[in-house]
Length: 392
DNA sequence: ATTGCTGAAGGG
Image 1 (tube, rainbow, N blue to C red):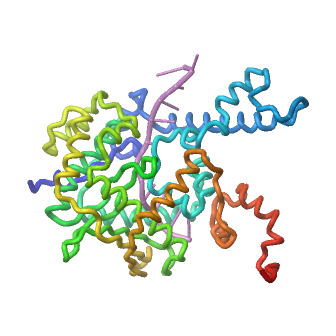
Image 2 (cartoon, protein in one colour; image 1 turned 90 degrees about the vertical axis):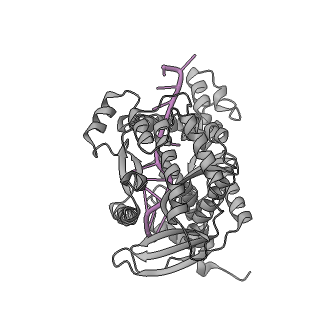
Image 3 (cartoon, rainbow, N blue to C red; image 1 turned 90 degrees about the horizontal axis):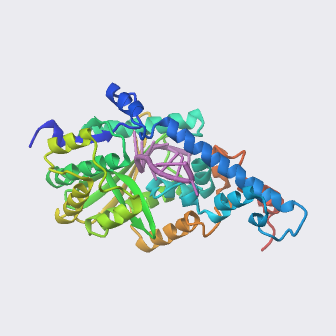
């Protein structure tokens, strides 16, 4: 009832193998653990796919009927190219994704092409930018630790990872209802045909008894964000509300969750996950037990929809509050934005770079040198220069 | 394996 466990949140340790020695052993011992070696394999395959596709488009210029599809060529390698070709795979398939993160759509809101380059070249960041992100992350972690402890749970499968997420939800809902505040609440659900996964920074009840979402943004420089940054942040918290509301209203069903995530309900949970479930007072044997329990807890705990969306900007170095905003939730606007972004992910349209008036974003973009959008725009730039603007 | 797979957010 008041033990440390009820105030603890679990973190999975698969991607942080240095925290516990036992985790390292489990990872190397288990062939299906998705460690770093698996990741590099997948990146290599992706790279080869892209090369294949480039070759297949280049082969169109060969002598013969040039209007023919590349795959019409009688070489078997071309059949292979057609099967793997970029033009028949949606970005979701090409990147081997079953769902997206809320922040994927937010980066897409900032610059769609930058988000694509980020997926193609993961971990490609300048050290300066990485340092700012690290500072932000540790400030968030410090705030989280003010509210609860973190317990590291070793895992090996994605089913374990989701089970940890579910156990956290099961412990956080009662905490929110009794103590009025939680941090890092996981959310997931379908929006406009795509499944989104994210984490709400903070939820609390106000003195008026309203449920408020609070998103902290830390900033390198002691200045308020530009409108473009605010727009992105507004979109982020709006997505959280959209998904959270759907969850507590029972619109995110166990069946829908399993359908999108392709979780194996009959895969046995890892011993450490089962141990922590038992210690947390949850008598679950399987993942499907856990999912049903989460669904019931979400829908039967008298959780309201989120009433207010609050953004707070603070200076990283001095912790000075730079500003606070209350965001108006515009459901139709959120939906139509998501529809537009999803159209890219489903392969219904090509990715776009920023509009000319947002070209200043390129100044701090890590992909500025390879960006195709900028190259294309450069060819037109003479007619688009501000001083070339004529009477219209 | 004719193959599989995901801590999310971190800031501009």
